[in-house]
Structure formats: C-alpha cells, structure tokens
Image 1 (cartoon, one colour):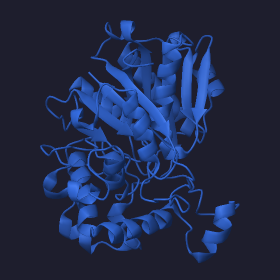
Image 2: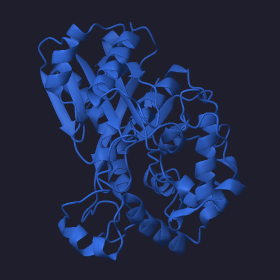
Image 3: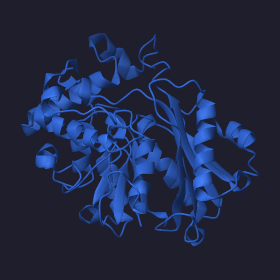
Image 4: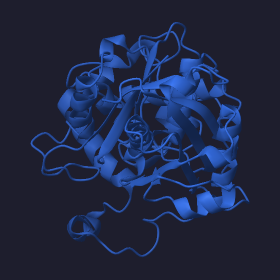
Length: 379
C-alpha cells in the first residue's frame, strides 16, 4: 500500500500559449528543471521517470539532456488524458517499493501549434470503420453523442454545462498563468456561442495549447524536509469498466457509468478519505460534460445528479466543491490534464490563486471516457 509513503515536493511548468517557438523536448526540459529547482533537488539525483505514451520526448532523451545518473525505474502510461494521475501514482508505487528514490513525471505538448491527430488522414480503428462515415470524426463529436444521451436521460439542459464553463473561467480570471486570464465569460455569452458539435458549443471545448509541466516525487521521510509543504500521495488508482469503448462506451451496460466509476471503487478502497472528506477537486475537463460524469463517478453525488450538483455556484470558489481552481483545460491550458496535478499540489501548499481555505485533501482525475486514473492528495 502506498498511502502517504511518497509526496510531490516540486512542481514546474513553462508558460502556456497558442503557439510557442520551443520544441516539445525543450519545453519538457524547461518544465522538469523548474520542478527540480522548486524542490531543491539536483538532476543527478533523479532515478525514476514516468510519462505518457503519447509523449514525444522519451526517458532516454530526458536523462541525457538533463544529466541524470543511473535511472532505475521508468514507465509510460497510455490513453492520453487518462494517464496523468497514473504517471504520478506509478512513481509513488516505485518509491514505496524501493525501485527509485527521486521520481519525475512530465507532459510536454504542442497542441496549439502542432497537428491534431484526427485532422488529417487517419488509419481507422475497427470501431472507426463503422462510425467515421457517419460523422464521428473528432473527440468533440464522440463526446457530443455522450452528452446528448446524458441530457436526455437526466433532463438536464445546456445551462448545466454553462455552470461548468463559467465556474472554471472565473478561476482562470484569478490566475495570471491562465491563457484565459483576461477574458471573462458570462452565461449569456456561453448560450449565444456557436456550436462545434451540437449540443456542445465553443465554450464546451478545451483550449488548444503549447506548454509543458512536471512534478517531482520523493519518499515521505525526505518530503518533510523539503522547501515547500509536501502534497502526499494518499491514494492512487486506475480503472476502466467492463466492455469499455473509448469516449462513448457503446457496449457498456450503462454508457454513462464510465471509467471513473471503476477507478473510484479502487481509489476509495485504498483510502482513509472518501468523497465527503474532499473539499476541492481537479476534474479532467477536455469537455464540459465530463465534469458532471466525473462528479457522479467519484461519488460526489448520485447517478444522474451531476448536472444539478453544479448549479448555483457550487463548483466555484466558496461553493460546496470548487473544481479546477487554476482554470483547468477549459480556461488555463490543455496539456492532457497535467496542470490539474500541479494545481492540486498548490491547493495542498496553500498557494493557489483560488485557494480553498481549510482544504486538507484534493482529488485529481484523469480523462472520463478513456481508461483513466485518479489521485487523492493530502496535506
């Protein structure tokens, strides 16, 4: 069991923008060096690495360019947005098992200026062979299908999706690092926005961002003597449901009970804390409908109540569960959810630009709709 046996002691990131000149490798190196500096740890001490399978900069390039010593643990986690918390969780497992002593996880991406994998010619998957001819070409189209079913089954409306978009934008307006820091969003602007894939409009979609982030983990004993208050890895889990099908769950018994449900069962089984003990959450928000689905999956409310949960400012600072307090993927930056991890650490340090007073624990989730992962961080 890894409960509180490892902690995040350093975080770092580049600036975020629609287009940055640096390569993904250079951005990764900048973010990792910033995280190591934040932790007060030299690169030569790093002996564990974890990243996404979609990361273009591998562990050999990182080790070579940063001047690392012998690396005794390295792993990559698949499924894009579902991978972030698992990168951290696998490092925590390795530290607890003695496989490494100082671990670094990172994500670097030029999503804003680079290509989109679905925008050009594609090699269709078996499922894609049947769905692409009928218009499911992009992730937003697949999530739109899921969102339509959710709205139909629960009786929710686009007003509930506006609750999410407006809440995270207000968080970004307090965060100078956020791409949308200077751009407010009203409910009226949301409802008047053009559709991208109905019922999802422009503001239901995450940003397209260049940037990189990283974090540094050590064992609990060393963490206590660090430069900053540690964010302990209290619990970690990965999950995908039976008959899982990426993004839309066609063949599941209940397509709206997605990977977060399987992940949550394992997460809380290994935790002393439950949903009622968590005062702030960083929920993967590539699209607004993923938030009510995650609220249900991670047991903050019952099945079908996720949309209503977010009404009347419940997801905003001062509400019953503030989410994505840096602005998240919708309004800070979209780097496959890694900014949610760093923001969870800031909440545990007490340094967030939208700090939740008295928060002792923070849940961080990976993508809903793909095989996923989650962490519970605690002070």
